[in-house]
Length: 91
Image (cartoon, rainbow, N blue to C red; front, side, top):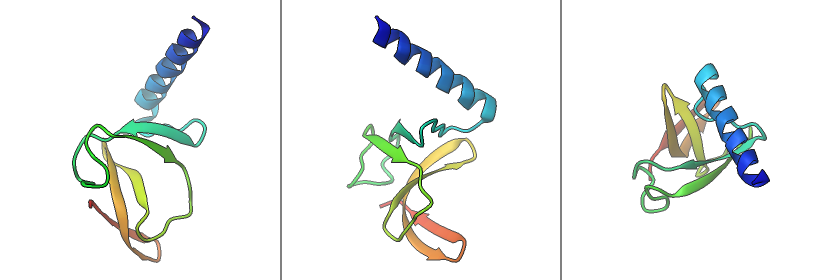
């Protein structure tokens, strides 16, 4: 019962933070999980796959990243880095 209460409490907290901040990718401990909704990363990552996301400032070519574009979360691979500009694409 204690575990269920803890998970329910964390879930309600995360939902409220997302609603208030507008940040769809809330990461309270610099890690989170997400479900992939589209096939843009096929064949490596499929729809309904569960992915673990870890916050970092160290990016490189071929890294898979998750970023927020408006109201959507996008899972793509880095294909080019030029200075501060990063170009991504689905697989």
